[in-house]
Image 1 (cartoon, rainbow, N blue to C red):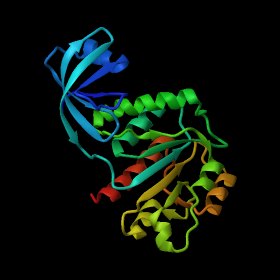
Image 2: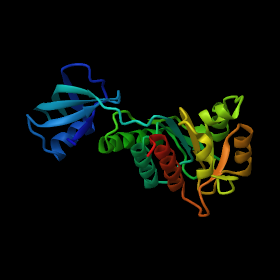
Image 3: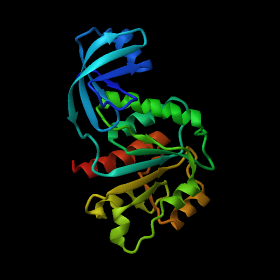
Length: 250
């Protein structure tokens, strides 16, 4: 796969200009020269074969030679609501969820949360998404939603269900060591791949009893991921991997 670069502006003409970090990486790190071929994506789902035309200190002008619609997304929309871990573990979390094809990461504010998902943190996570997308080949960026309280999110995602079929069509799963069912037992009866799935992972100390009660009152299903206690990012990737593989049919 050719080197990939992200254009913050939609690619809609015969030329595209890379700026800032993307241009500096192309010019200073990769030491590109006019005539080199690269791949550019703009988050729309398409990717563009481009030829380097002109290189400046902090920008690069590329000629668009080909446009391809390349879909590398999952057939199901998965939102991972996570009480963020600290430091570099946030970057690892974003990288792996992006690679797995997760549609949205929803940072949560919880009672026992250790990392506050400020606007500055959310902006940094969005930059991580771009870097991970360049590496893994995704042409649509995983969405990083603005932080929200767990209670608000649990209620907002509660769609009134009229039958078990509808529940399975939009499952909402909360990972917790005391879950009545295992994740595998929960996935088995889903049958047809749902169109949308929400998963919730608490902080290092876990969701509080009150937060679990809020989940249950809003029709979230509490599931456990095995006999060992997993760190936040491990739990998120474990459940996301299982769902992504199930949705892909692999």
